[in-house]
Length: 382
Image (cartoon, rainbow, N blue to C red; front, side):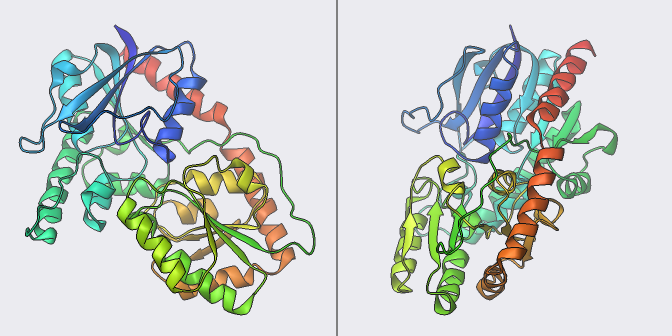
C-alpha cells in the first residue's frame, strides 16, 4: 500500500501545464512520501508518451479507463493507498470519492481551475480529457450543457465526501462553498514558485511582450493577438511571442497562427518549451484567459520581477493587484491599453519589484510542501 494515491485527469505525467507542473513539484518536494498515480483517460485513447520522468517515489502509474457512455471509471483499477488525493472534480473526483468511501480511507481534494465553472465555457475536450466529443450533426450547446450538469453533480459529490478541500485562491474557495463545500474543511494553499533571478532588460532594447501558457480556447490567445496588433500600430519596436504548447488543441492553435498572419503580425510561436529562458528576455508577460485560478505563469513572471497584464478572472486580481495591470476578459483594446501604459520603464520597474517581493514572500515552495505534508499526516491519523 502506498502513502498517497493521486487521482488525475488530463494532466501529469502526460501533458505539461499548470496542474502538471504543480504535481511534479509536489512529488519531487516530498521524496520520503510514496505516491501512486491513477490517471483517468478515455478508454479508446491511444498510448501516451510521458511528458515528465517519474521520480523514484512515484512507485506506480496506472491508467484508469473512462467509459463516456456509462460516465464511469472502474474503481478496482485504482491502487491501494492510505490517502486518496484528487486533483480536480468531475470523473476523477467522483472516482476518488467512491474509492475513498468504499475503502474507508480519507479523501483530500485540491482544485486549481474549477471544472464545473469551466466546462460551460467551451468544448469539454479543451478542458478535460474525458469530456465528450461533439458528434457530427449533434447540437453542440446541448452536449456541452449536459456534460456541464454532470460535472457539477460530480463536484458536489466530491465535496460531500472530502475530508479536506484545498484550493489556490480565496475566490475559488468562495465558489466552492456555493456548491456545498463546507467552510470548516476548506483551506487556501497558494501556488508556489521557486526563487528566480531578477531580470532587467537593458535600455534601448525592443519591448518584448509574451503570452505564456497552453494555446487552448480557455486562454483566449485570440484576444492577446488582437491586442498585439493594436500595440504594434503604435510601437513599431514591440516584439511578440506565444510561449507554450501548440498540440493540446491543434485546431485552435492553427487558428491562432492564421489569425496572426491575417493581422499582419509577426509573432514567435514557440510550441512546447521551457519558459524559463524566455522570462529573461521579456519585458511584460500577458495572460488573457477567460477563466483562471492562480496561474503559475504569472507567478513565475513575478518571481523574475516582470510586470504582468492579466484578465480580472478567478484568483488573478488577488495575485496581480499592485504587481501588474488587470483588464476585462475578451477585450483586446483594454489589453492593448495596459500594454501601452507599460511602455513606461519606471512603471514596469515598480510593478515588477512589487510582484517579485510578493512572490518570494508568499509563494515559497516550502510553505506549500509543509501544508500538504500536514494534510496527509492528519488524514492518516484520523
